[in-house]
Length: 69
Image (cartoon, rainbow, N blue to C red; front, side, top):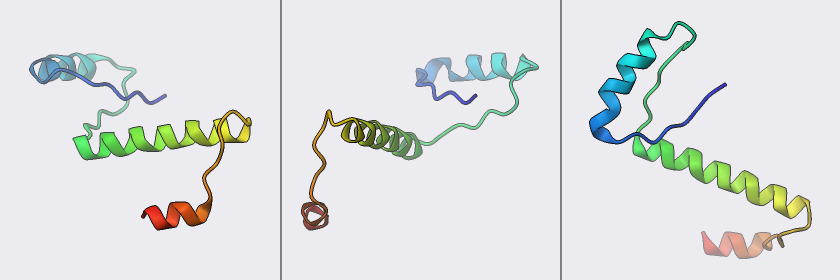
């Protein structure tokens, strides 16, 4: 399982040391703000797609999307 945490800057070093001591933590990979934002944007897009498939949200026209870009 992977987790994405938003930690206060002044607590990061303490938490990193704690995580390093836990044998069951396989890998610690800090993310930049840009990568974190990208992950959140993708997560939101997937949730919107689920709502569209369930009929709870109307999909946008592909031509409108292209024109917006």
